[in-house]
Length: 80
Image (cartoon, rainbow, N blue to C red; front, side):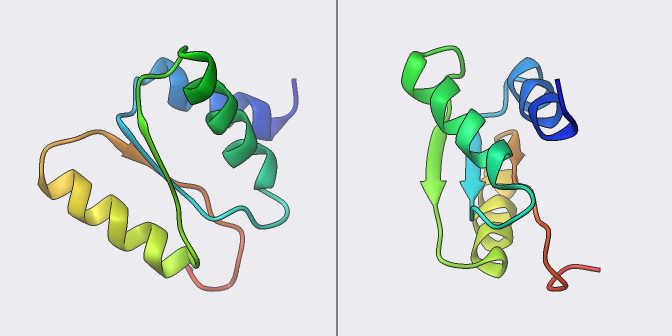
């Protein structure tokens, strides 16, 4: 298991409820694995594919403020 697979599994085990995903190298496999978990039903979450990392964070902030457990992954210089 590589680091991306481990991160996706950790999110699944944490039972996140919202996944805000912007697939971008090198973390694309995290978003792909989370999407597979949602489709298979091993993760009961809303999967939101967004158009940027900033939008992903906005979705996470909004969902967290509503009281849900959220996750995203980033790889760009957009987030220090």
